[in-house]
Image: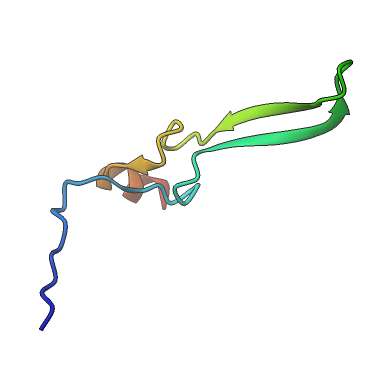
Length: 63
């Protein structure tokens, strides 16, 4: 019979705003002189690009 192991409450949780995908490269639609596409690299504001937040920050983000 399997046994379940629950993580302690103080462990970080996945960010509720970005769902763990904290950084993204957004295509602007334009091309540079060498033919490559111009991109913007953005980070989630809530977790600051980490993908995880503490339990307290996760509760505050949902308000």
